[in-house]
Amino acid sequence: MSWTRVCSTDDVADAGLKDVEIAGTKILVTRSGDEFFAYPLRCPHLDEPLSTGMCDGQTLTCSFHLWQWNLRSGKSTGEAEIDLLKYPVRVSGKDVEVDFSQILDYD
Amino acid sequence: MKIGVDARGARFEFDCPADEPILFAGLRAGIALPHECGTGTCGTCKAVVVDGDVDEGWDAAPGRKFLKAGTREILMCQATARSACELQLRGRAGPFEAGVPVPVHNTGRIAATAWLNTDVVRLEIVPDGPMPFIAGQFMLVQCPDVPGLRGWSMANAPGDGSLLVFTVKMMPGGSVSTWLRAQDRAGTPVKLFGPMGKAYLRDDDRDLVLIAGGSGLAPMLSILAEGARTSRFANTRAHLFFGVRKAADLYGLDDLVTIRAAHPDTVSVTVALSDEDPGPAAQQRYPGITFAAGFVHAVAGPALLGKVADATAFLAGPPPMVDAAMRMLIMEAKLPPNRIRYDKFV
Image (cartoon, each protein chain N blue to C red):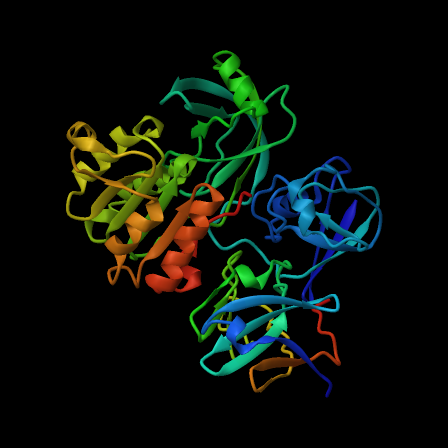
């Protein structure tokens, strides 16, 4: 594992969606309570940015065709035909850190 | 040309004439390839060319922004095949749902025109042979001398498909708008492809939530007319919310008054004006219709809260309106996504 700081815990509101670019890799950082999750920014459907989607703290919804995933697992909750790929995340103090040792892509 | 498509492991094959967009040939063959607008804008029909030679078509198609540079991605609605091709899709494809008409090419003629306000013209198009459709669907129309297809939703109950009624809103500077304004086009021949669109009315007993902005009223008029014809509103409800900027932008209200008067207990109609106060005159002129000030999604939200968890919602209109209404329905009204129907034209 090699951890890279992507943002502060204060940068993501509860149930918030934040897009972050680290060394050319774009990710989505989301939050449910004290837990943080990171996914590739682009929707596996047609590459729409998931940061413009909707989140209620449990479910992530892409705003383009309403594909939905469980926020914690990235697994489809019905309409989505492809599960999200998930980056390892840890919180260290106020830093949200992501392991980029494997860059995730859907193609 | 023979086209092979791999859609997440499922394989489809169809023949594609050299001058026909690959998407249209596939749809005509009864394969529900991913698509929405059919006119190069939404990006939903993108595919990767794995093998073969294509002409990518319209190089300024707005939907090209969804294609990844440096890959062999195409928009199937624009591309034509120069050789046999193998394509790969991200999403699924399959046969058309039972009862959903497979699109066809046709010709027809504009039989009558009528201006409903200064910016909306009603076109009656008679196809050369019926084109069955389902309420909520749209047709691609090509007017003579104007390049490209336009996607217009039918505003009438389908019947046997021998009449297609459209309410077309003028776009400032738009080439079809300029063409329609130049003179009365009644009698003019047109080319047609369709029907298209997945935001169509299902034969079920769910209540309906219809949210329309501007030109988006057309499919809602079709859905309401078909619902009235089939006695759907004898025991299920329909809540229509129609948003425009000003009272001068309204159209179709006489039809809505009639439908509402026939179903006073089950059909409600609310008109939202975002840029001016409705005032009492409109209320008197259109009995049974409720007028409100504000954006249509903001007016609809509180009115629907807690009432529509089992409903099906239809959305049509300018993209910011559709997006705002969709967020309201998912985040506030808690509708599951598979009960929100809309077609992305932009």
